[in-house]
Each structure stands twice: as structure tokens, then as C-alpha cells.
Amino acid sequence: MKRNENKEGIKGMANPGRYGIERVSYWLMRITGLGLLAYFIGHIYETSSILSGKAAWDSMLELTQTTQGHIFLTLVIGMCVFHTANGIRLMFAHGGIGIGKPTRPDYPYLPHSMNMKNKLCIYASIGIAALAMMYGLSVLFGE
Amino acid sequence: MADTQIAEDQSSAETSTSKIVTLRIAKSNPEKDSVTKFESFQVSYERWTTVLDAILDVKKHLDHSVAVRYSCRQATCGSCGMKINGRPRLACFTKISELDSDVVTVEPMSNYPIVRDLVVDLEKMFDTHKEMKPFMVREDTEITPNSRELLQTPEQVEEYIQFANCIKCGLCNSACPTMATDSSFLGPQALAQAYRYVADSRDKGKNERLKIIDDSHGIWRCHFAGSCSQVCPKGVDPAMGIQMLRGYLLGFRK
Ligand code: HEM
Ligand code: SF4
Ligand code: FES
Image (cartoon, rainbow over all chains, first blue to last red; front, side, top):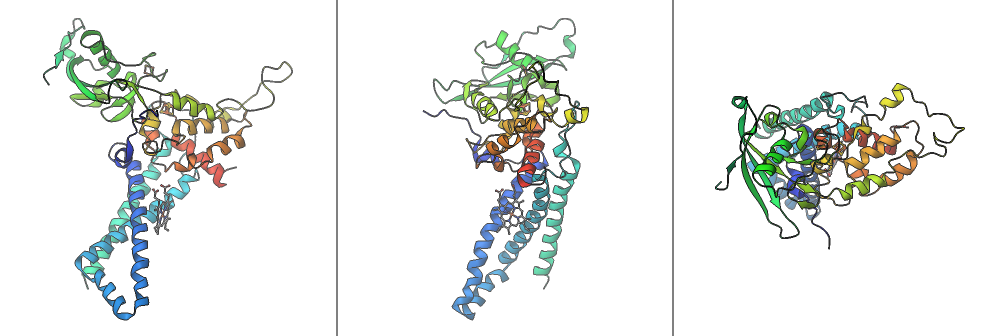
């Protein structure tokens, strides 16, 4: 019999509150990646409606002209900007770039890979995503 | 709670400096059933009292059945890892005063089978550690009579020495979000040790190790959430080692 490994499971994986901003960024990256994937599939479905003629295309477009549609699109803008900006940071980090270098450890052992540069990039990604969303809102609702 | 008890104060003259904390201990015995019960105890502590001290205090005076594993009491043996107020820590290296809370909850670390109460089974981590070939891989050795010592510059030592600090306590694997869902993931402990030997100028086993970790449940499951490095009590920074290794595999590093 397989022993119960007492895995934390999805709840533990998702909980972004315990381990600092890097874990939050991990969580946001997942959510936004999956959100974008869902949007992308929906987007193909939406645009393929043109094959059924102009009327079908127009009625599809009207979905985004509502208040809910605007809010949804604003979320997509936010997801897109955060995912791209943080994704660029991660592509460097995953190659071992910008995460500090090994040293002789001294107490209190601050991990160099969790450095200020990375933290600032995460906050900046969240920040410009918020700015882009505000700009999106002003364009969508300010017409 | 009704069964809350007060430990007799053992300290001598300076009782005025001690405070009282509620210690909640998770008790379970998987051999019997899958129930986890929390028992609360009132324990007095000083500024320097560690969580392990408090647990042993309970064990000595209030409930001798509490299962806890420890040995060195100085963050060296790696046996006392447990979840303290929701985060994996060494009980002997965590002072109650630094937790800044009136209630201290101790549970067994996540992502390992529970033996009993606070003790988890680290066997699988040790096995995965061994898979990384945690030894010098090279043809000659320092001990054959005609060969010379394998000299290193201080700079060459710095390349790996922080990773050699690992005490195999398993806190990193317990904090890792991939570990939380993937039973086959190698985990930060093993991957950091793969890097420790790869980065050692005396070692020639880089390609062998890279082949082992380049697996669907290997290094690619790391998403750099960094929680391993946040909880490591020895400054190993497994997350850095893993990204460095990935640098080799992706061709960013030679
Ligand atoms: C220029 C734009 C983009 C960049 C720079 C980028 C970068 C990245 C990176 C580096 C990761 C890996 C993160 C990790 O290891 O945790 C990732 C994950 C992912 N991305 Fe993107 N991405 C971009 C656009 C997109 C788009 C348009 C979609 C959807 C169609 C998408 C969907 C995903 C998904 C589903 C994941 C997996 C998330 C996870 O497992 O945590 N990405 N992206
Ligand atoms: S890397 Fe750190 S947290 Fe992980 S087993 Fe080694 S000492 Fe413990
Ligand atoms: S008792 Fe040895 S590490 Fe805590």
C-alpha cells in the first residue's frame, strides 16, 4: 500500500500568503498563464464567428460592449501585462541570470536569489499591470 | 480548551522574566487511524526558549506520549524540522519569542509521510539525495599514493560551499509548491545537492548529473517560487542552485 505522503495539495500550492512576494508572483504567474490560455481559446472561438457571416460577428462583438465585457477585457489587459513583464524576469532567472552568485554564507543567511532586484521587478510588474488596467478602464468607459 | 494544563515552573530565581505561551501540538498516529488531534498546553518561556525546549518541557511534565525527533539542539543534525505556526522551521532553531504570538502551533512537516505526531519519514528525500551522486565523480583520488592533493582556490571553494551547508532537514521540500502536488518531483534538497557537486572544480560528474535531473519530474518542475530558500535554516539557497543548473541545461552557462 502506498503510504499517505501528507501532501499539502492544491491548497498548499496556491496559498500565496506564507512565503513572501516571490511565492505571490509564482501564484499570479500561474493564474494569469491559465487565464490567458482560457482567453486565447475564447478569442479563437470569438473571431471564428466571422465564418458565419457579418451578423454573427457583430453579435459576438456586442458581448464586449457591455459593462461586464469591459471589466473582463480590463482583467485580460492586467493578466497580459503582468504575465509578460514577470515572464521576462523569469526567463532570465531560469537561466541563472540576475539571481546573485554563491558566496560563503554568513548569518543571518539572506538568500541571494531572493534579492532586491527580483523583488523590485515583481512589484514593478504588478504596478505596470495596474497602470495598464487603469488606462484600459479609462479608454473602455470613457468613450 | 478543557484539557489545558500549566507546566510547573522549573526556572529558579528569575521567574519574573518568564511569560506564558499556549503550545498546540498536533497528535496523530497513522498506524491506528487518520485523525489528527490538537492538544493545548500552557508553557512558560524565556526570551531564549526554543520551540523544541517547550515541546520537551511538555513531554517531561505534561504528556510524555508526544513524539518528537531531535538530536543536536543546535541546527546541525537536521532532525527537528516541523511546521511551526504554518511554516516549516527547525524547532531547535526557532525561539518562541521571535514568533511574536501568544499561540504556537506545531505540526508535522507537509509533503512527508507522518510516523507519529511531529515525526515525519525522510527516507524518500535521502533516497533522492543519493540519486544525485553526492560524492566526487572522478577517475583518480586524493588517497592513491602518487596523486597530489586536489587543490582549490578560495574562489573555487566559494562556488559551492554554501550548498555544502545542507543538513538534510527537509524544510525546503516541505515549503515547495511543486512538492505539494507532485510525488515524483526530485525536490529542492536533491537539486541543490546536484548543484553542490556540479559546481565543485574537483568533480567531473557534471554531465551524468545533468542527465539525471533533466527529467519530466526533474528540474523543469521548478517555477522559482523561492519558498525553499525562504525557509532554509542554513543559507543554502536551493532556488539559486536550481536556476544555475537550469542555466547549464539551457546553454546560458558553460
Ligand atoms: C510575451 C508574452 C509572454 C511571456 C514573456 C511569457 C512567459 C512565460 C514564462 C517565463 C512562463 C514560465 C513560468 C514558470 O516557470 O512558472 C510562462 C508560463 C505560462 N504561460 Fe506565458 N508568457 C507569455 C505569454 C503567454 C500567453 C499569451 C499565454 C496564453 C495563451 C501564456 C500562457 C502560459 C501558461 C498557461 C503558463 C504556465 C503557467 C504555470 O504553469 O505556472 N503565456 N509564461
Ligand atoms: S537545503 Fe536547507 S532546507 Fe533544504 S534540506 Fe538542506 S538545509 Fe534543510
Ligand atoms: S535538533 Fe538537530 S537540527 Fe534541531
